[in-house]
Amino acid sequence: MTITSPQVTGAEEMISARLERLPLSRWHIKARVIVGAVTFFDGFDQLMIAYSLPVLVPKWNLTASGIAWVIAIGGIGMLLGALGGGWLADRVGRLHVIVVSLVIYAIMSFAMGWTDSLEWFLIFRFIQGVGLGAEVPIAASYIGEITKAHKRGRFVLMYEVIFPIGLVASAIVSSWVVPNLGYKVLFMMGAAPIVLAPLLWRLPESPRWLASRGRMEEAEASMRRIETAVIDQFGEPLPEAKPLGIGSAGGGRSTFSDLFKGIYLRRTLMLSAAWLTAYFVNYGIASWLPTLFTKVFKVDVSTALHYSIVTSVAGLIGCIIVALMIDHAGRRVCIAGGLMMSSILLFLLAGFGTGSAVNVLFWAAGSALFIFAVNMALYVYTAELYPTRMRAMGCAFGGASGRLGIILGPLVVGQVLQHTDNSLVWVFGVFAVVALIGAVAVGLFAVETKEKTLEEINQ
Image (cartoon, rainbow, N blue to C red; front, side, top):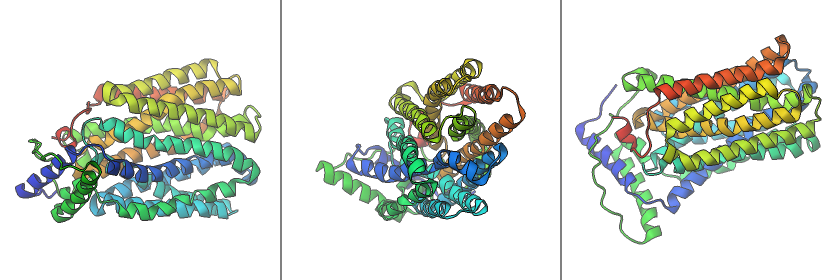
């Protein structure tokens, strides 16, 4: 690993100091909205497969195992996209990778709606997953790097709330489009975010990332663009930037092996457990619920999709709550507590709630409120636990662990449904145990980061 010179390290620290003394401005909101709009469509696209399955199952005569693989193939693409995108973003820049990944998943969404072939549908879904997997963790890195320490959790999570809004919009739109216009139109709508690419190109690259790479002239230019926008809004000079007095965590190149060295080993293992368990539960339930309603409880497609709206809205409420409280309660309490509450509700669902579709909906919505909040909190928390030189890789590895959960959750549901009696009891019981494991891992090994600068956390 190459370490920057003392002169570059000092300049890098001053870039961070200049970002930390900026007041919240229209520029920050604009950046959050533009990057957040990408995340909105990401959320919109991600669960379209779940809302299309009640139609796709009879179209291709899919078994429980086949359904699981249709869901999981996208997760495999997301896992590879997260790892590759994170590695690339720490080398060529945050915004370049976000734009490329956006274009990939937009084109593949359209292609999924174009084909009638199951084989081509799976290929396009895999490639779409690569784009989806790369974009979200890198976007979280970018937003985290332009934000100061004070109330960073709320600022970042109010951006991240746009993702569950996309999930809710997907549920609402799907409930009308799929029965009336067909699943093809729904997937073709997933190409819409490509119009955001020009707006992303106009944003300045992360000054923190540029400085961490020793590209100080570009970091200075990017920083001046942001400062000029803030000065133009408030009409007065900015306060003098004072050195943070904490140095730098080191610049230069990093590799994935650095995620498992020193203080980062414990952080990486803890985050991997949190991401995997949270997404195992979230995606396993969310992707299967519409199909469970139609196959197990014989609910019609339109009603099943309307039920899914309730679960998505509950998750959105959980995300808003955690955004408002995370800077007060702290990351550790919010994440571990959310996983624990989700586990308790899933145990109750397994024990008492599998007798009817309405009961499943009630308990699943309660669990979604907490598990969605955990998923959102993990984005801000993961971006805080690594220095700039390896932040995108850290977020990507966490995201990849989540994508592994996205792969395993649906596959486990398929196997349980196919091979057990009282299968719903077992399905939700497994989810409850997995959420409990995540809660214990975070409760025992998480470190608190609220109200600390990114540089201070990574000393």
